Every structure is written in C-alpha cells, then in structure tokens.
Length: 422
Image 1 (cartoon, rainbow, N blue to C red):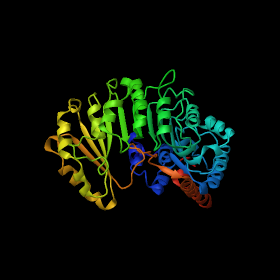
Image 2 (image 1 turned 180 degrees about the vertical axis):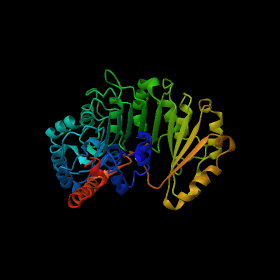
Image 3 (image 1 turned 120 degrees about the vertical axis):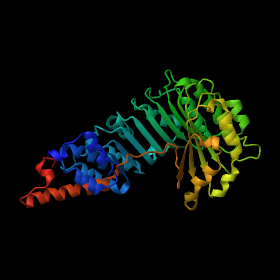
Image 4 (image 1 turned 135 degrees about the vertical axis):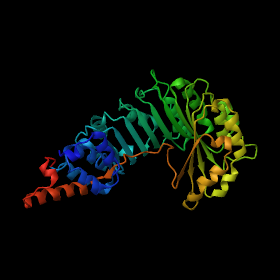
C-alpha cells in the first residue's frame, strides 16, 4: 500500500461509511486495496433482499466464480410469496458464514415443506435476529416451534398472520434462552394472548430487556401483566400500543409494574382523535405513564395525526404538568416525539409541537421525528444501511467483471488487479 493510503483502519472505515449509499463509489473503493475491499463489501453486500423475480438470477450468481461476496452478507430478507419458491431457494443455498439476521415475509407457512424448514435451521442456525412479517401460521404453536429452533436468537420482530382464532396454551417448545429483545404486533387477541403467555411459562424464561407489544386489547392485559412480573428487573425498555377501547380503569386493574424496577425507557402511543378525552387527559396511554414506578430516563410518545391542527386535541397542559409532577419522571433526560403525519404537514409539525411544550418541559432534551409512513414497530426493521437486492449485487459484480475483462485487454491492469484484489 502506498504511503498516501497508509493510515489507521478506523479512518478508512469512516471514509467508506460516509459513502454507504453510493454503489459506484463503493465499487471503486473496493479496488483500492484489500483493506478497503472488505469495508466496501460490508456496505455493498451486507444485506440482500430476495423477491420472486430475483430468485433465478441470485441462484445463478451464487455459482459464478466472481461470487466471493457470501462472507459479507450479514442480513438476508426473503419476500418470496410461494412455498415452492422458498423451497427452491433454501435447497440451493450455501452456508452464509457471517449471516446473523433473517427476515421472512408474505408466505403461508403450510406451503413450506418440512425438509425446507430443517434445511433452514441447518443454514441459519447461528442467526441472532429473526423477523417474521405477515407469515401465515395455522396456529400459534406452529410459529413457536419454528422460533424455538434457533437457539442463539437474541432479537425477534413478529407481525404474523395466525389463522387459528381460539387461544392456545403453549408450554412447549421452549423459548430461546438467549432472547433479549421481543417486538410483537397482532390485531387479534387470541394469538397475542398465546404468544405473551408462551414467553414466560417455560422452565427458564429468557431475561428479556426490551419488549414492544401491540395492539393490546383488554383481554390480553392479564397475560401481559404476568409476563411483566416474570421479567422483573431484567426489563429495561417497554413499548405498549393499546386498542382504542382500553380504559384507564383497565390499566389500573390489570397491569402491575412493581417488579420492573430497572425500567428506563418507556414508549406510549396516542391517537389524537381516538384516545382524546375532555377529562384532563385521563386516558389509557396516560394511565400507562402513571402506572409505571421505576425512574424513567427516556420517554417516547408516538403521535398519529393528519394535520397540524389536531395537535390541539392533546391536552398539553396535562402533559406538561405530568412531566413535572410524577416522581418517576424526575430523572427524565430525553423526551422523544415520533409523529406519523401526512406529507403536507411534515414541515410544520416540529415547530408546532415545540411551541406547545412548556419551558420546564423543554429543558429536557426534546427530539422530534416526523415520519411520512407509519412504522410497524417503533424501533422499525432497520435494514443494514447497505441493503442490496440480488439485482444490485449482480450489477456491482458485473462492474467488477468488466474491469477484469478490460485488464486482460490492455497492458495496464486496474489498481485492483495490481494490488491482488481481483
């Protein structure tokens, strides 16, 4: 390496990280040296998303002599919506040595063969993060059985479509003991109740640190309370979204936070038109805020609105007063508003919101995130910043192939050839 490029690896990574969305520039960086190649591939191929029309091209790419990027793939997302396509993919995949994150979407699990499920466990047994988005299971136990086969799982985000409408008691299979983060969203109370119960009824429940659950009906609250008691002081982050008919009395009657003594981060959800009442802001989300007993350092309030005007539907006087008077909010260091709104109101929301906060409230570090589209989870599925489809991976490798061909047709090889990158 020339002296001009001989500087600390941390600086190299910072330079390349700055270009994470620029595929052509990253491809060029990968030809500078072997040291730059690894960091560049981390961004170009760190995440791959497969869709129906990508499948054949991706499988063909895997058998190419230029396909040396497999060790760079950390996250794999499948949006194949037919069982036979997922079967074809899994039975033709090599092992991805660095893969830690698997996401499956839009598939009816009954169409997936047992041999494919077994092969997936062999291929992806070392993943630490699993996302299931609109994967249809016949019953909660089928979903639990699949999840339990990944023993190193640390984080999962689930938005399943469970076809069985009756609640189901799940004591087996066991929850992965390494699980630390759980995000679960369901519009039906039966799978919600079954899943929440499953998380804590095994012999050794996992020490979950972050829990996000929604949308909670009254029927799901007792099971949630049992889970909260079982988690006890291990729980640090809690995010609860309630159905519109849940009342403050339901929160008081069913939820018990007394054992969650280490809870530090709390998220509540407010729909300004549904949850707003005229009784001094005394509604279910505010009742959640009052029911917690541990000192909260970060409070996130998720707001849904169509226009800036509906911000007035929130009782700001109540919020400002509550933030100053509740003892467990005395340690509050950060107040985060996450606002889902129509695109026409985005430019005005942050200023309008800050004007409604009192000076005492504003003394906290107040962050405002304005989103055009709603997220399924507050901590949204964060793809690797270098997410690439199979098509873009093929395009990047074709560029390398063209450089390789050009090197053989000329007397002067490109820098990547001279340094032994290709």
